[in-house]
Length: 167
Image 1 (cartoon, helix red, strand yellow):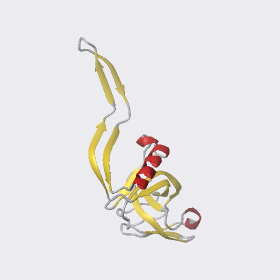
Image 2: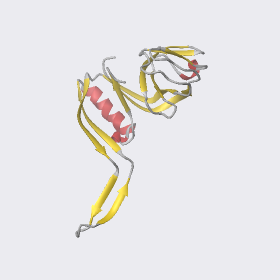
Image 3: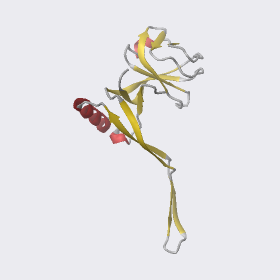
């Protein structure tokens, strides 16, 4: 792969019924050929949806198993979730350089003029990341802007960004 992949939402989510060891490049999955196709971007996560790992593209698929292009980095227990992204944009960018990370803990407290606390508000913590993408062609830039607007709500809806060296 020589670019970046922006992925959003889960499609064809399946629960694994067997333990899959780190280093595996295929997973036993009954009925896989009805849900997945060669070339689709594939992901796996723990049963609770956490610890998402990118498995690369589907390399082979039949009625009993699915093969992928990147070896599994961490073993997965029975109950882990296998899925493909519902919406994908692949860009030819050569790199995504993190410029700034911001963490909002979700607590807002305000003081009155006299110094007493008068309002405390709790919210879900949020994390933001500002990236500089290098190597985009004008056409790829237009496609990315359209995808971010239509699929990711300008980044307000969560999405996954993967590329070389990604986990």
